[in-house]
Image 1: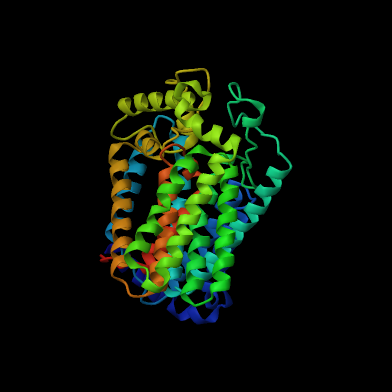
Image 2: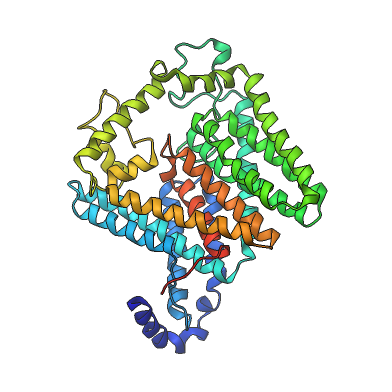
Length: 440
């Protein structure tokens, strides 16, 4: 690989200076601190701030790569697909009619993929720090859950038209909580909670594996509490994705769980399902919110999405191979030429359709291939590994990614930095622990 040859020369040049700098000696600590700071500040910081923190992480990682003698890049099939995906995005950007807006979009993609590289490089040598990252995620979920509960208790007013109440009775109008994530939006809040609740369950399972049943039960209670608050977001995409996401740990539980824990965990899983049914059946507002999914054109939000899907498909038909160029601003400007109504749209409300519209069919195929090879490698490792902790961590990461991808069928908050950084952190964890055939 040419890049490894070039990297080796850089390392030879910098080798005499490696041990003489305070910064170089503590690079790993700086990288980990910047990762933790980014994940924590996702709770309340703007996109620009989070992007800046990600670039700091990438900067320290690049220094580490250049001064670490013998370091070389090895990539898997799914990472090769990512490279192909990135190549098509670059080509799409080069041919975009709104070139400057596409440049902004592709820079965001570079930041996210570079952050993934940074996490992978760090976790490769510090696998135990995955537990610390999970601890940070649990804190984030608990913090947002408390905020969400307080917003629900105070009947926080909607900051936008988050629910079509035209055909609802007053008791059917839901107080939709939105947490602290910027921009304030219940769909973003619900998607963020959906992506991290598996971590709370996963940490609970890790505690049970260590024999700490009391802490395990506390973790389960926190998981259920967080799930209830997630439901308070009123995000219908989350309502649809959550039960299917939970099939991931259920499947692993059925196949790999030790016999001595199966009975307890089956009961807990049944209890979680019962809690969901209870919330639906005994809450008039939640029931009305769920049934609005099937109202189709009678619900203004659903009708708007259908209009966006139709317009986005027309955009794709006119630009099937290279797309219109990546970036939500680029999409927004182009959508004005296709929209069915007088309402603007920031995205296609489907991450797969959005990828096809922005970067073309080949980029979408490369992205789907990336997902396939990554998930396949994680599942194979889960099925054959004898390390219970590895199985739990991989299952947790896989469930989180599954939730994000399922929610992405009806929304595009996937492209928000809070979700992007969770997603790529989970991908890096899978890359670190799962068994993949590497290429050079």
